[in-house]
Length: 181
Image (tube, rainbow, N blue to C red; front, top):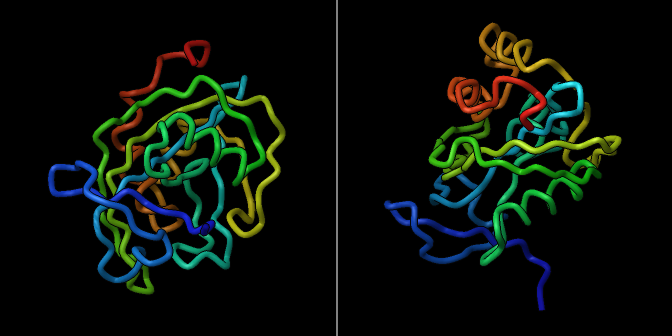
């Protein structure tokens, strides 16, 4: 038995077509695979942004959404999101809502490593204290969503490419008020 994390590979129609070890697929020719992004909000309506650990193989030190991950084969997306929030940030999340069900992107890191993901975008809420895993996150901040959008527009190079792309679409997919989370 292995503890190796598997990702779900997708065909050209975004349908599952197999699995592969996560560490083996993220390279210069990354196949399309299933992932997710999650933006976590607090009771004040602020969004949690995280800065990727400086030791990350891709996009080290850039600011990004609350967390991302990959569902295990057969795992429900909401379960994967709850699992990853706990593992990466030490938080429980509730109110998981799909906001951008068809988000897909391809980006190349400065090291030549490719991200090639069908990556639905979700929101969730927490009232837990953040306790990030140092191998994943070196800093975090709770910020107003409008401030994050403005910062990503002003300095896109300081943020992950998926955050910049997602924020362009996410505004219209969010509730008008925080109380709707």
